[in-house]
Length: 503
Image 1 (tube, rainbow, N blue to C red):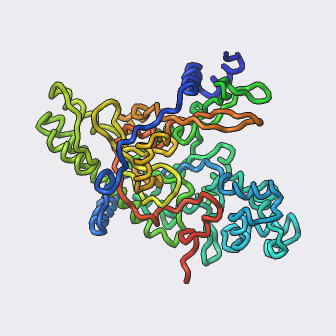
Image 2 (cartoon, rainbow, N blue to C red):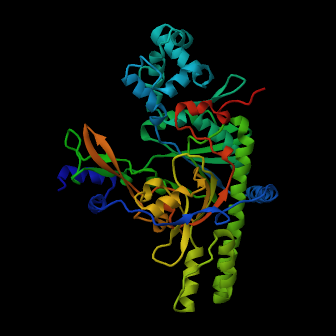
Image 3 (spheres, rainbow, N blue to C red):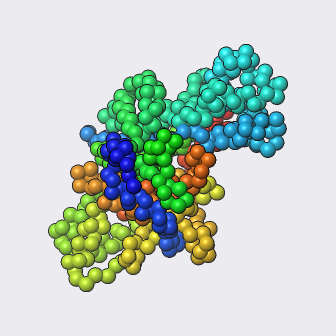
């Protein structure tokens, strides 16, 4: 039962009371699983191109970008805090850090602390707080003080800081760059048009000022004007939490407990962008600038594939309007070549068939880079049954969406060869496409969390590149593994593509 205070809070957030009833109904259901048909692999769901073909797509993209008035935006979800980056550090601190053998990341950090971009900054904090340098503390085997100053509010508090504001890379000239800054440098290399480059970062409200202050330094970069926008996840997408008995959870002062609805909530932020093309990439997946040549090349490659597809789709839609059923063989051939569709639905009449393909082609579409799977956690490409029709389409599916108790489904998962690095190009018509119309609302997540010592259940809306884009036209393209350089734990910053090239 909602109280008057609850209703006032809902009104403030912009959440309809019926939406709360809907959320509660989802908690009462079992989280639905996706029905995998088979993994998407090269030549059966994933396109793979030779170098000479890749160069042709790069040229297509460069030609597109050189046209006057083209606006391309780089969209970067950047609200996530670095809590998991320092998870082992917190565990070590809780255990007293008297012995590092059980904490390999902490030991690896203390053995390599000078190689991190924030070394000088942390050193200054330690001298201020303890009167000792990081060198002195590590030499005296006092790693506890060092990692406390790095991860907690005792010092830099990076364990509670957005990844985008953490110094990821240092350069031979002594400069350092945060993940946020590196995205600007990389973006200028592939989205600049008419001496302008457009960026959109989604950030947490409490860090708006920090991001805006950092952005203010970058009015221009490499003779390119930067237009940097920020947005916050809409409170209207927040979700309630429930107990194990599906009763609403409240804070100690009696207010409904709300949680962010996951990255799928950013669909509304994405839909607000008006551009011919949007590149999407996570904040922590960014290499050192010494390796940008490779990442920029493959961004342009993905963009070129999108340009070619857009032209062909527009051409086929025009033929369908003019020629009707006569255009269907060419359309099916196109869908077979790019989308690997070789089985098509049957219809009672020709009009139904023409209407279906008009809808099928008039959707938002995306070109998604896929890298070979080397054990990274996260989603992958699969063939999934399309609604209730007798054919399958390509989807990105998370492991949590798969029934691992089902031997057949588990076997399909284990046969997967590629991984989704969240590196994609999307195109949609802001005036014609309501992105909410293309969401699989059954692709929500329910996870187990804790709050104030009690077990609770949390709800996340369909993921941005999973259920939220379920009904988009999707093309998977293989890109090299070196384009995928995420920072999931702090010691990932010691890997090759996060360190400067040796002279």
